[in-house]
Length: 110
Length: 120
Image (cartoon, rainbow over the protein chains, first blue to last red):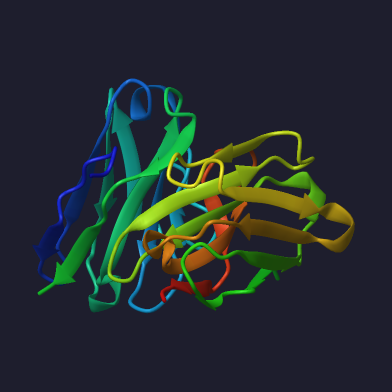
């Protein structure tokens, strides 16, 4: 059981937009920055978003992040088949004094 | 180019020990926090442990507290994870990861991982 809650799967057609939610509490998302990672099959995770909504250099602006209260959202526009991957949210939990991740969301581009 | 190369994984019996290493290059190692994150086969990401740039601050997941010890040698640009009293549930791919700018600010680089299998 993960501290952060993500939907197990989402799907959308190529070219469409999808959002992935990440729900937590005041001790984690509510008071700390959120990061998002993309894990393509058989590869290491890759940072997509940090500090809730910032993109590292090289990450296209099709990927966006937002946070409101104790929830965060990853948005992906202009979906491509190459976006099929597992997506994870992560943050610091001040009560647990630990880094916590969501259980991951599998994105299928139909 | 940032590179993180893990080593030291393998097959080990329950109750035994293993030491993982991560060789870092392509950045100023002693300016960044470093972490270990693991992924059991077919499962999600699980934070294991983290260490501040100077080694003064460390943190552990409850599942490994008292059994695992994280350390770093800034002179050798290396990160370590000493794993004792290993259990079957420690079986996972262990990733070395670099903090973006703070103890927790996300991980902007990851190694390819080293596989630890705990089995008799």
